[in-house]
Length: 167
Image (cartoon, rainbow, N blue to C red; front, side):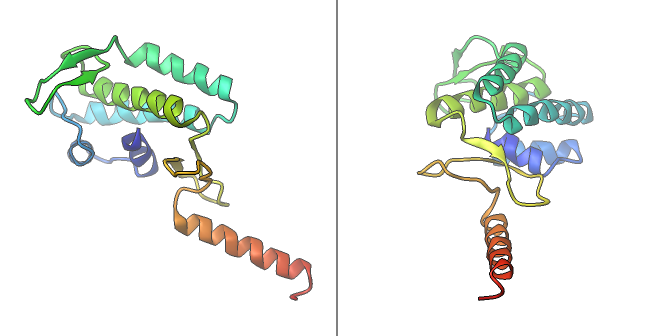
């Protein structure tokens, strides 16, 4: 799911870049990344943004369930790269774009059910279109980064000073 946040906030412009970022995220891809995969993942991320930006929990769950039905499959144990047994929620041999979509979709479901349905969102800073996954201890994240949080705090402070006549 964190890969989804990363890819949505900073879209890939090439197959090589998508492959590099998947490897950096610890994703063992089953096939080389193609330009077609980049295009398909970009479309998927647009749909996934609808889950991220949805404020209503029931609607968020419904949107995520649609993606789960489309991209995920029954879980199965695998040790395909010899680094230990783990679960896959995709069929063997699935195309790379669908592998990435399944990983992000299932990761999102696990994140939201494990930490709370409000632990994913769009940055509340004015003019920011980035998204975040709230992995904080208290679950109250509202901004994509400390920089956006600080800019918003400064704006609020300046607005309150202007309202009170600068006192």
